[in-house]
Figure 1 (cartoon, rainbow, N blue to C red):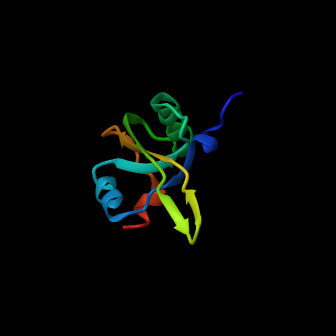
Figure 2 (cartoon, helix red, strand yellow):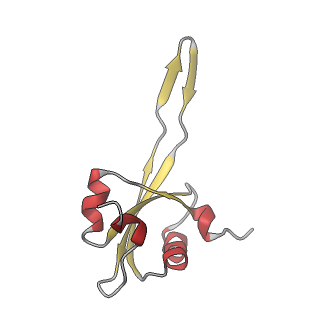
Amino acid sequence: MMKFAYDIIKKPVITERSMMGAQDNKYTFEVAVDAGKIEIKKAVEEIFGVKVAKVNTIKLPGKWKRMGVHVGKRPDIKKAVVTLTADSKKIEIFENMM
């Protein structure tokens, strides 16, 4: 089954640290846990119309949480830090945040 770009890129990560990276053409996204770097690169280029130089990924395991006697686990997430080429245009959704 073919995955669509919007299935791979879930949402942008908006934190102080990710906003600092946006000034250096580095944008952070939450992505599908099973997505590879090449898939992420193609999805970002397709959605935002930019040129991607590099993709770094990190897997974050979900935390265990308790509510009284019940124990549950938050879902695992995967983040991708996407570095754009120097001649690429910026991603607008991040520019409006600063």
